[in-house]
Length: 361
Image (tube, rainbow, N blue to C red; front, side):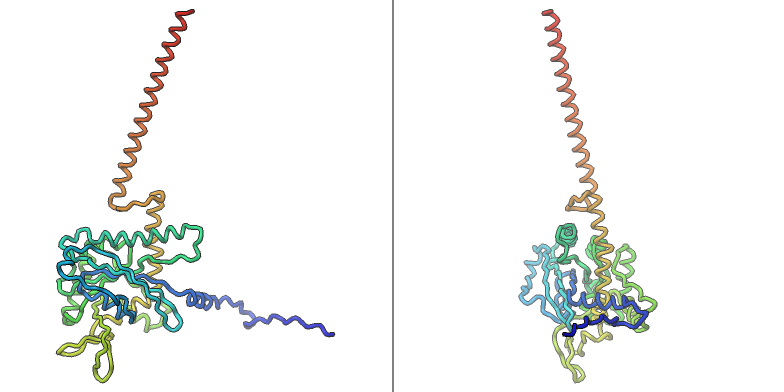
């Protein structure tokens, strides 16, 4: 009876080759299997085509049952937060996309406090992630932090409104802001360029930090470098959204039909829709990294500085701590005064007792 020889382990690689150059493929396989998560926030006044643009970007209907409120309702309306999550799969790669909409923003007559709800939502997501990260089971943390905010600017003004400036300054240290000029088909090409320059000048003047695309690495190919250069030059993106298919020059395209012709959504000569989508898809990982390494780390270090205490209003933080310290000091002083009074009474009582005993002796 012949013994079965154990099969010999064979080195799959050529001699002198260890094999760790294969690690990126392992990471790729694992990432594809796990899927990706991304949260996009859209902020802007009603009627600027935010919902249409988002549906156009991801070829999906995120708002099938939306009811548009009337003018009278809008005046009294407060800012709400509506988060819609959709699972998108393309060539085996899964993306869990959450779009956070902010209906009611800028609709009320007094918009002074209209962005507090939005700031609270961004902070709550950081708070939840910090809580999950500090918990016992950290294996399946769902990342709902806002990775990017498309801020829609009206094409009908002459640049940024005071509300635009105030809002962007309030959130620029918490989230990556990408400014977007809505309904670009209402402007001529010259008007569009003029408005873009005006907005960029005002952003610089008010020291607003928007998301800056990273420079292409030196080892990247020339096409990618040129694409990055064009994307940087297109900020703020002027866009048109539509899910309607129209026949133009013998082919079906998504666009808007006007008496003077067709505005094609995906034609880079007509608007920056394609550039905006390319920027979002090619820099999705960078947007997540900036959120993790910059915005979330800032939030986390602030929370640790405060000893883990949650403070609702950031502006009141220092004053609140001072008031708490003063109140604590007063309580301590009152307690010491009471203790001193009690000790004095005991001492006086003790002297009286010794005088009585002395008389008896």
